[in-house]
Image: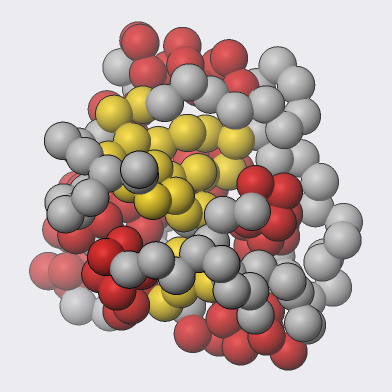
Length: 171
């Protein structure tokens, strides 16, 4: 059985270990987080503090975008955009990993405490009952402070999350 996580598209580009997993993993990615990738590529603002790391990450983001823009993958993504909360067919992105794009639309419930992409991540996690994977400790703290009933893993705990059976407890 594969592990499922909700995450941002940029995480898949930045963290190569997300694509090289010991067990099959499925990532649910809100469509708006895919759109952010285009912003990252076109922005002069660095994603990383080190110039060399920033160049590498932007190359990886470009590679992911190029892959997702291939005709078959683009067609799968377009299928999800017809209705709110529709999900694309799976897109393979590694030997044991695949993504599903979710057309998450509702950004109102947590708008005061979370930005629109964060809100969509939370809503997909709640709706699908799938843990959220993030590299932002401050987001984890805000989720806990807001008492949002989802399971969340820090990227540093990713191997622990995929190797064990930790999908029954919520914070």
